[in-house]
Length: 358
Image (cartoon, rainbow, N blue to C red; front, side, top):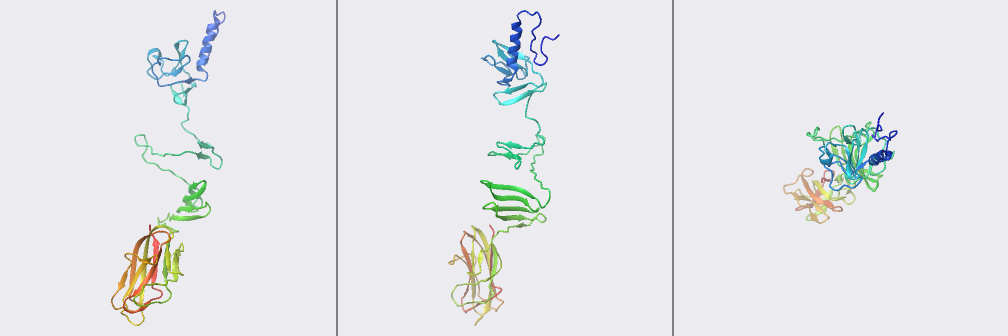
């Protein structure tokens, strides 16, 4: 007949036993030490200098002094002495200085966090997950880092997102105050898109990349090409704005065909060019000039040109091109000039074009 219980090894009170209270108190002492087990530390190999009654520890490997040979056992200080409690598989212990829960697996104390989590329906980190957002996290920083070669990894890191079909959406939603301000990904097709919004309902594609060719498109880029459909007469010695009343294209409407002005919609660097085609009026020695002008008064450096040779009507031309930084609201116009004789800037082939490049 056993003299102790099977699992906790608590002493039985035996029949005809004298001083039964001793055995009973021993069992209570063991219960007090083991039930709701919480230890102060698990890293010590020698007993602390001034333990309090009831203090408990998991003895680290290499125990010495009163703990010699007690490796991984629970040591409890009671009635002025250390008592050894050999653990059994399934015992759980809260380690107070680390704030972790351990379980004894029959050979060592291991953490209770499972090695893998599979098929969870909801997971919330710092917040509550719900069916609409089954994984939710509320935090100020997150880190993904590659498993190194030394650790058995490759040193690479890939974050993979997948959608079922090309017509589905796949991407990142960037919000401010839970109002969507930008979308990044594959929306409605396999072309890569970056779209932005002011109100979370109307979106503008800033960048599109064709996945079959790699060609990049900027649909909202300000760009235009304007021309005149009539001959612009210009007298001698006066810089005159060329009337450019027709456009081949005018993305974002930055060019006004009524005023023949390009107005920068946003700050940036812009590239402009122009063609001035000569048409004779009274003499072919007109000495044609052209330039681009900022805000109606300042000649843009690098945009001036002149043809000083004898002109050929509808054949002699000047080509202008320059790059200039603009701020939103700046205007650019094309001006023409005749230095010797008056003349025309010919219809159809007198043109002005530009676009934002940076």
